[in-house]
Image (cartoon, rainbow over all chains, first blue to last red; front, side, top):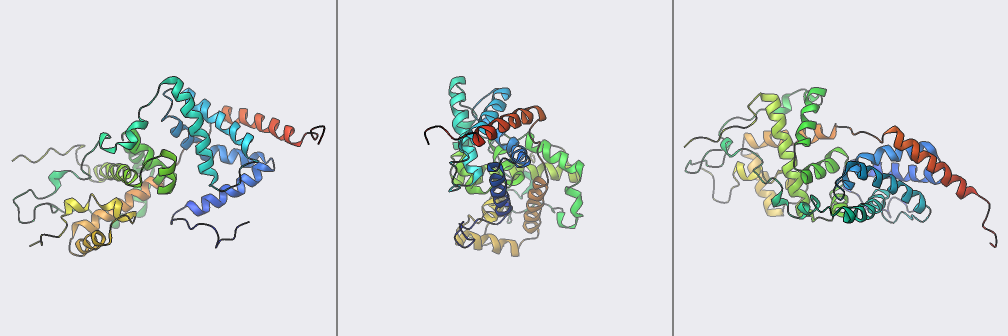
Length: 236
Length: 91
């Protein structure tokens, strides 16, 4: 067993704990532990279905690909040496199966959009009307006050009502943004894991994440401040 | 008056993710942080983004539907039996 010092250092976040937890679950799975198997099925169900959906159009087929993936895991777990994380290995099995099914379905979109983030709902993070216009001595600076969310009680944005708005905002994002923000911020994957699984560059990953997070912030701002869904651009 | 090299707020909001991800160059990071010290709005914006990320992190996802789980548990049972089975003759 490698000691902690030999293990590659992971970025801050929930990952190290999640990865240790995976290691424990995989060891238990090898011993034939049903509860460990179920825990892994639940933990990875949503991410795997979402990944499969990149390659296969039919949601029922995506679910089938996920089932096949787990059979592939059982078939290969005794040869899995843990050189990559379980998560990476699992996603590789799924991606290979999904690509094969997708090729049969001649499905290419929206995966192709991942490498062209410009094609995916480009827009500024903040409505340009919120900034002072060109010609002003302070052009490009905030035109009005921002609300201090730091003074809100912590629960304000974590209450069910707020989270429902967050969920809707994520659902309304272009598919590739939705995918990246879900993997990163809901499921706690590292940037490196997301880039590896989706085969995108670090810069593209950040662009998609940025647009997604900015979109969710705007939705929360509308929820908190009761502003209309789209501010009309300032008339000149 | 802002100096020509200063970031505007409008530019800063587009760099927030790169900043939080540690992906800005040393020079851009310094410009970003210099702007934060000198601006009322942008620190509030950064806090809004941080709270947004925390809110997204509070979402939970559905596990596997029970029927699919039951099916895989059956296959897991088969797998265990095959694995624990008698040694292959000739070994």
